[in-house]
Length: 164
Image (cartoon, rainbow, N blue to C red; front, side, top):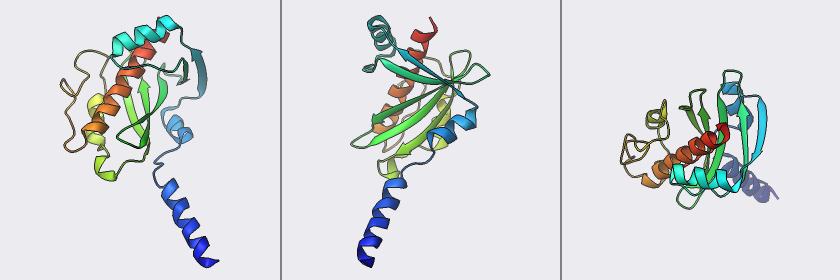
């Protein structure tokens, strides 16, 4: 019985160890309190895909508004074989003001450092928001870098489509 309890505890710790921050904690840290739900039209999806160069599959978009005019979006995607969830905050000027990783299930060797994530601050959706442009690649973690760049491009394009 003790052995079963120990094994259960180990699985519970392993399952929860990958969550770095809850959605509620992340939203509180940026002051985003108002939940907004949108259903993108086929035209908005096509425009976001065209502008970002990234596949936009979901018509349902949930964002959280902050009193300062910023919006927090969450994106969950697969990095290599495991999921990652990021919060991307877009400021009132349409630039990225913050990126936080809420969960990361890949090996820690592939986890980006804060300094790498800070490259995105102040960035808008343009040709330089790529690993071949203004964003330096991460040595040994190119799939992580690609996943975060793609999520950023997709969120900025969706934000632009919603603000039209």
